[in-house]
Length: 313
Image (cartoon, rainbow, N blue to C red):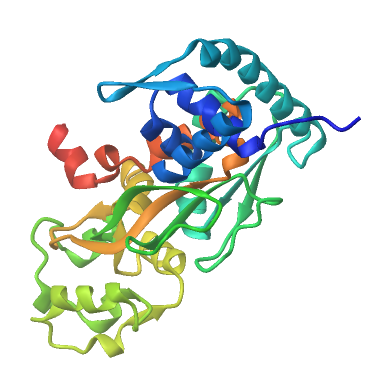
């Protein structure tokens, strides 16, 4: 039997607009433009042959036809979402969390208790390693913690949320400072040698900023230890091998455990930002929402900065 149905996009646009009584709110929820919502609403009204909304000041008022249609349509769309969720790739409701290696190893995997407290025990959670330039596969990842330039557009088909910029500080192990007789609040750059410095990627933005810390040094940064991966330099510092530049987010747990000490070098803000990406099909899934809130808490700009945190004590 062939059903006579209005376009599904138009029904979805109407349901969101009627529920919010706002074209703007509906557009934000569905991640489309307001003009696209208005077009879908006109299409539905033409298809049904009725007026669904009346302008009321800056808002919208539902007509009798809209009031009659809304609850049954909401129920129908919820039913479609439920049945497609049961047979689609989300079957079993496993949550697939993608993250770069450094924030995964230094932040997320140290705070699994927080996720466990938020997540129902019967929902499997899978962690997947991603790279900087990955195009996320929606069949493999539901939610991801990425680091990217602030002005880089989000991936097509994903909900993108900026969290906080990378803020770089200098750190060293307390044992190394004691061995060298150095005061973390008053490091004399002139007393340092090239093998006291642990650098990350000589061609990175961070390298040029770090160079300003050592403009009074008697050595060239080309002679310092250089690592191709952030976590390698951080682990070397933790092992008492020298001073490293790391971000407040990445180093926070090491500082809290007493394994690294924040030094008196001026911090600098990178143009790279932590950002959260969520697959729209699972954006309203309670388990995905719980995982997203967990990541937001760990990468929160109000708690991420070590200096802000220390000022509050």
